Amino acid sequence: MKTLIVAVAVGIAAFLWLRLLAPTPSWEEMGDGMVQTLNHASRFVIGKGETKVGPIVPAIPTVPAYEGPFQPGQEVEVTNTGGCLTVRIYPGFDGPSWTCLPDGTRLKIVLGPLYSDGIWWWAAERQGWVAQPYLSPAVAGQEEPLIAQGVAARYRPQDDRKSFAREP
Image (spheres, rainbow, N blue to C red):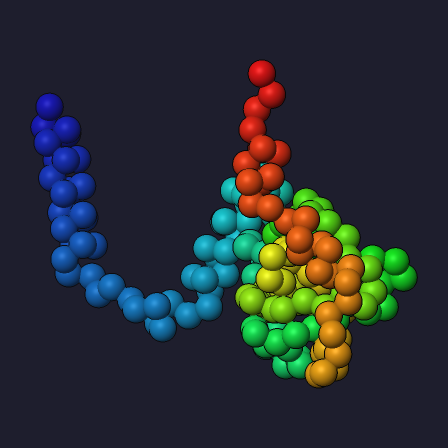
């Protein structure tokens, strides 16, 4: 019993000395050794027993600053598609297709740019999202091609509700 009391007393004394009397080093005093040890331990745990080289968290992709010729409110024209430009419901190549606009179609940009899949995307009035590489500034004074007027005339918001309604 005396041995147990002595062991507990020594343990408490050691704890108090380490906690209260011993100086606590700062991060600067610990240096890079502590950081390397923590990274190594993290990689070991994440790697399920294998030490892995490289960053623990993957790099966050950066979005380049937009320096292009377009801005919201501007008229643009569909060009260089080799057929037609796919209009998407949201920006990105994985966005569902809404319609397809042939070369020469004029659009008015209402929102953007948004960067997705390595290119800039613009929201066109009453259309959807279009990719910038297939747009060029519209020449002032030219009438809007009839095809664009036809596409805009076919767009009816009530059709959207029917297309998403469940079939009985």
